[in-house]
Image 1 (cartoon, rainbow, N blue to C red):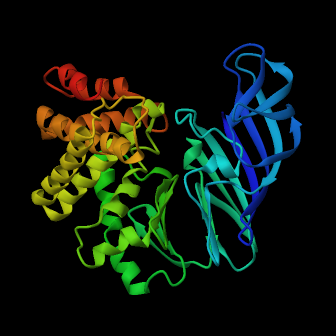
Image 2: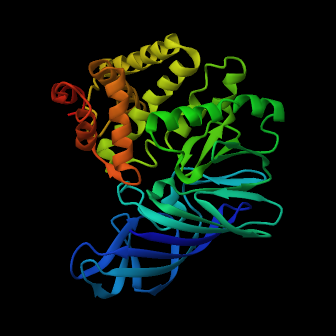
Image 3: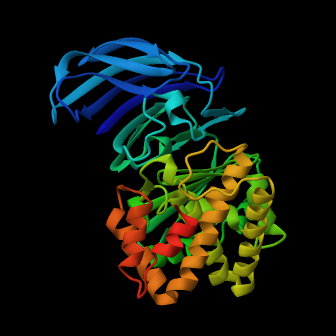
Length: 401
């Protein structure tokens, strides 16, 4: 996929959505006659452009073309859809926001993270609501807002929100940090205290990545409940996970984790879910690295101890998979123990093996080389090996493969 141009009208009253979409793609082979997209509960009610018809087949949306498309040639598929998404939209009394499953509220590919595309998104909502989305704000009229995401991005990271949000913003160097909060989720003072360290987190992750904040801006949306989801250029943070910092400032994992994803996961994305640890293991490790910077080495060591206990629990349950393990896992919790926990512990082992300077130089190399694209474990290994003074193959074989 090359580009999605989407215009949606969500209805907070009943959880439905209607939309028009233009998908631009390039064929990777001669004579392409159809394209496959993630199946969902929407109905495609009209087609145009190079699309001739649609059908649901084996749980996927199939769009047939009105002509064979040659290798390297582009096609534009125009679709009109409507329906009630089974997932991906969270409806509140006076707000609506997306939650991970972008391809449930639009037509896209959820499970090909390495297939990145740009996005234009227009949202029409009742007047008086404030909206946010992935990308650069282009224009706004009463009830209608448009953003453009010029950086090719995995479609699972597309998202939007609209509601009667409290709002504040500030500059962090050249970047703009904006905070949105669902009304009555917390007092203004508590919100400010809970998010006070985000500017310092941005500066820390920029330094470790060797790259500025992607897109030049970042938005934090605070909602009731336990949400914890990164999107392109913004994150949704549930107050249940965020509020513990008011009693213990070292419990700042949620804001740090979702922010770190802007580099590791969003800017550099795993090429397939087989290498999902590159998103989550690196990010979980970077939360510990932030804690070390902010609260001292004891805070870092505590994170490693907690992660080790999580992995040990998985092993006791009979799960000790390599990081590139495809699955299936017995449960989501056990999968997370490996992908998040073991992935972060591997980063710690790599840090100790390479030494401080070489390890951080390797992470910068990896992030810079694959920024805007996708990578697999071998790509990561090559980047780290280029900065190492000893072979890393045995360590990667032990942990990753």
